[in-house]
Length: 173
Image (cartoon, rainbow, N blue to C red; front, side, top):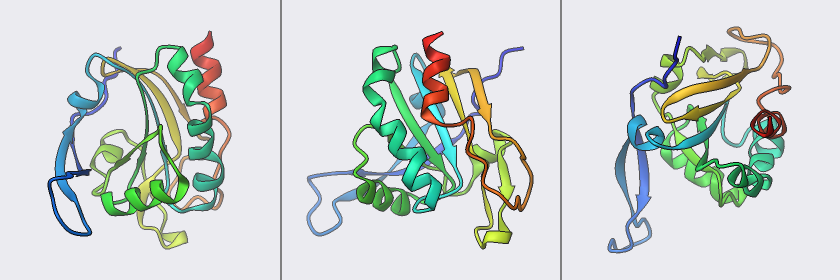
């Protein structure tokens, strides 16, 4: 059975230097076809921007190993989070993210269609993504690493298999 990424449209913000003022950004819809068709993409998803594990380990390590992923034929590394475009932009700026594309899933539609949407009310987050990573080749999910303990209001934040090193090892095989 072939598993493809679900079809959805993301609401993103892009810089437009023709715009004047302190906010030179405009809305741009970005579809899963535009993101994944005819590309090899590593995706990792996490519960939230500015959260401890996401900010100290998950995103920084993918950023750090970017050149190694590119050398293995990966066209793009994408971080998905159920956060809006404004939050993702500010988080990327604060992290100095230059290589990983931060993709906002503001309504959680993509995450829900992936079957990865969980309730994190126990942390005051509401609905968020479970932590996972996947390798996608031309829209087809070739491998997926899902953290153990998938459940609503999980009392822990597992971070064992969705990390950059696990994905890099998979791609090297």
